[in-house]
Image (cartoon, rainbow, N blue to C red):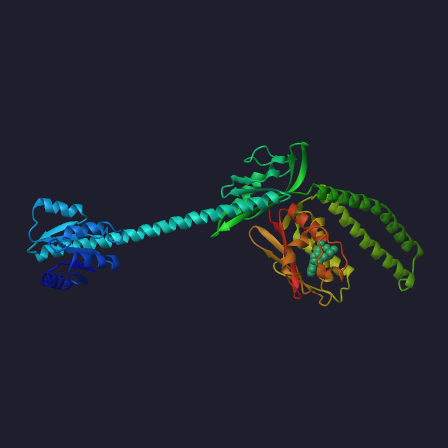
Length: 489
Ligand code: ADP
């Protein structure tokens, strides 16, 4: 709105008409006092002020506008019929006015000036708004920085309180924070603890995880600085994502030295016990076979039946002990694989035949699917047969109400895949990756079915040593498919 201040009603009238014809809103005052009162109450972007007025003249009014924060910045155009001399013009400017128009008014010039002020006012309003927005944003950012800092402090405090070594890395892998425990194993914040020469290199493994955008889990021995001895730790490094890109990494080293010692003692015990059991069992088996041959039982007699049952149980015991021995061989890195070019199809057939001979073949139905890999593949025949026998006997064991089994093969340019499918009890999805761990048994079925939980662990080691892959897909109460792949070359 524009305020026109003039003691002459006619002047006000004609000016008002002129400005209203250009779309401006107009307010009027007939004296300096009235103008001041209105200017303090309303918002004007321009005041057109007559200089010659009884009481307060225009310059005095302008001076008093300059004294109030609400009015001091409103531009003023002075109108005067007489004070055209330079000194009056200068006085007008000094008292806060910005322009000066002499009477008689040239409407075009006045309109030009009013429009210029209007535009100036619009621009300065927009600038003010921008400025306010900017200030608000800066304030907001400052506040969120404070909040973030206190969150980070809190997070670091939590990492300090952990019993583990804890640290954080930025997205490029530079260490950004370490807790006090770090310094038991490293002299410098930026240097990872020294690892045992036989263990994997932490930085190399981390680089791999960085590329894959996957967390890292690694068992390594790191050197304790004071005792100068290596202790087993479980290293975990987890990426923190923001909008699908890695923001940073949080890592911990958990001391598992005591667990490892107990595990080692247990493995040693298992190794000794299974070795010691193996010798008398071999003698028992030999004597029972000798007795069987010498006594020449009638095949239909109960005695022959008993001896056969004893031999079956000895065989079971024997395979249990062999499995335990395999586990200790794996632990000591002594499970040897002798790869020779072998016809995989004949290994598969032998395994199926063995299963049919040792189980009630009337009940069990094994179907062969897929192309027959009648090709020579470098593999350890005994060990691959061991894997297949394990898959097949598990398929029978864990399918008490369904005796249908599929053995399928699939060959592509690089690999051959062999799978054994059953329609048994299945495995819950979240437990599937664990079935290849040592001594792992699915709780739900462990009471009903006997076993040690080491068969699949041995299988995965055998397949790994063949540079192949092993896995399972399964659905509870629908069945399971266990598979392995072998590279063709
Ligand atoms: P074991 O059978 O002696 O327990 P394994 O290592 O062969 O040991 O198998 C580990 C576990 O995996 C088993 O205890 C069982 O819970 C589960 N499992 C293996 N094969 C099957 C299968 N075909 N169907 C359902 N569960 C299975």
